Image (tube, rainbow, N blue to C red):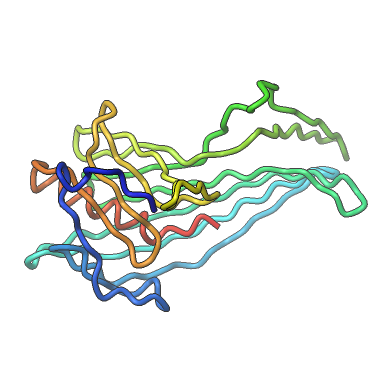
Length: 226
């Protein structure tokens, strides 16, 4: 992941240690914290269709523990993926998917992100196709692209979350390499989700905000969009 120049002057770096490249769900050290007890639940999928239009929803969950000096924060995350596809025949189809993640750490901190539609580069409106079959109808919309964004809440404080796609060398990839947390466009935190991972927190954060933000951003390190 491309790391902004000068970030070391305004943020503390929480380096990842002892994380296995072959066991991404294993525990590890994160600066002053210890991440442990990672547990993934079952993934379930439901599907329905109307004529050539199909809708599919997949949900999953995982949990983990963030600890420091005997104090524990339990993180819990729920993932979701919805997709709409139209069978055009002869092996051709069109469709789009939306992904989302919700994480909580205790009862005072929550993070929610999802993929939002991007504007089309040629200013065309999104296309809607309507099909009817067996007395039912479906009208999926198809858009130009997606990007992850969302919000992070700690007590009464609210922050913006945006995905980072730029790798070193200026290359943009299709899946998030990390996420930036900000408030009124001011930097608050950043996490790299490529294994083994990295995290940065703005200097001067209170212990309460620092602990809960570290816990929530750890949930992003275990997230697998696909």
